[in-house]
Amino acid sequence: MVIFVLQITLILTDIIHLLPDNIANQIAAGEVIQRPGSAVKELLENAVDAGADEIRLIINDAGKSLVQVIDNGKGMSETDARMAFERHATSKIKHIDDLFSIKTMGFRGEALASIAAVAQVELKTKRADDAAGTFIQIENSRVVLQEPVAVNTGTSIAMKNLFFNVPARRNFLKSNTAELRHILDEFIRVAMSFPDILFSLQSNGQEVFHLEKGSLKQRVVQILGNSYNAKLVSVQEETDYLNIMGFVGKPETAKKTRGDQYLFVNNRFIKSAYLNHAIMNAYSDLIPKDSFPMYALFIDLNPAKLDINVHPTKQEIKFEDDKIVYAFVQSAVKHALAQFSITPTLDFELDATIQQLDAVSKPVSDAQRTATTSSHLFKTFTQKGQAHFIEKSSDLKHWKDFYEPSAEKNEASSIDVNVSIQSMHQGYKAEQVMLQLHLSYIVMQTEAGYLLIHQQNAHERILYERYTVALSGKPIATQQSLFPTTITLSPADALLLDELLPDMQALGYQIEIFGKHTYVIQGTPADVQIGNEKAAIEKIMEQYKHFSSDLKFTKREKLLRSMAIQNAIKAGTALTQKEMQGLVQDLFACEVSNATATGRPTYTRFEKGEMDRMFGR
Image (cartoon, rainbow, N blue to C red; front, side, top):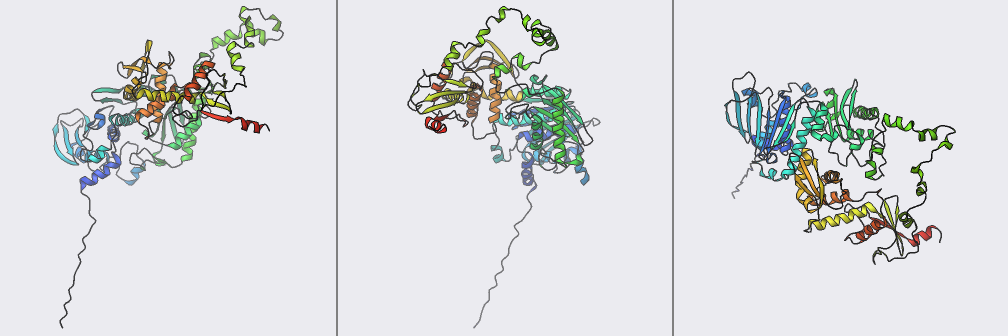
């Protein structure tokens, strides 16, 4: 018997291999170049490091089709121009210790390689001593053309068709408006760091920014607007450990959003919730808790005492001693505010119109103080034995009016508690007399007890539903302004208003473009007070930005909520009987009457049985 043994040998192949360079570069590029704004940041920082004192940024199609940075810096040699696009090619680091003494903006040699991996790139560069410059064209990380070129001293880098070779990533880019906003953010952060450099930004052929060289204060005002010119407090502290300088806004400039907050360490913009908390603490008791102060602060300290290499964008850093930096920042801001005699002078429960009165918002001048203290009436009440010399004056003949209430006040205070009305579910009697408490709440009696209505929340709900109907095809009537006013916005806010204009038109606003970042307000909804048109639009935009980080809201929903919040009558506003009755009637006519769009209750119910039990009845 013959036995055959069949031996089968299994050959297992290796499965781990190196990625091709172009694919590896595309993957790595995702860490650095996430959107057009990322490329803007890297290219602007490279221009700064090149020693330029004039830097121009040109973008088309919100950076999707073109991002170009032109500088008059020192330029590059032919060899350096070619090497600059290799991964980890850098002129900043030669030894590992250099990583901990970096003072330049870029240093890891990733930016140009990452850009070249996901876009079509054209580079023109020339040094001052070179007869001709170098032109390089790169596509998909490969040089497709290199030749001499006639060009001015400096460097021009154009990034075209971002993510042309990674369609999936291109599809994840936001709208042009959203991407342009990111570009503006990056541009402003770099431009604010270097006020001694001229920066300009051109979008689709139109100049958005032209920032001349100047002082830091001039640069802050150029970027954030002339409204800050007289509202900045200087911060300047020097210690053995670190130096802090810059500006913070006076308390009245605080806003509902964090937009105007800039923090730099060694001229590099950073994000630090920890240091932001230090600055907010310095404003304790000076601004409302839900408001945010403006600041542009620069911290300078030894690079060895921080690590800026903890994040690809270098916007998050680690300090050697967080607590020391926190204490210095808080102390510097507190000292600056105290030095300029900034103290809480406004009662935030007051009506907004009262807060704007000169008697509240402006300090007494020396001339006014002298005139007051030298008057006969002042001396009569401040000097001993002078009371019987009070002069008779026709101005005092109506003194009894202070003690005898008017008919309207008498009506409000003489509520007939025995009036019985149907519950709100069965209807509302418009003739019922109501009571206003603390200029914020409305008391309305029901058969089973009473309702306590928050007037601002109630009006907010009413306006929200009214605006919702308007955007569904029934536009709100516009109240034409007899004297149209103009409003000039920062470039970022102008971009936002352009986006909102069509919907605001349906909501009763008639706003026309009038030059660069300037608009004419021809009309507003009827519930906007005459003379308050400009402030109303500014507050709506500020509230809109407050909602902008919430992705679950559509653009229209954000606008609806913003307008309802800003146009609602505020706590602290006195209401007549007719106004209270109209407000309550409109509230219970709403589809949803018990809460605002943001979830705040509009009223709470108190049952008579509960009140009886409270008093043992």
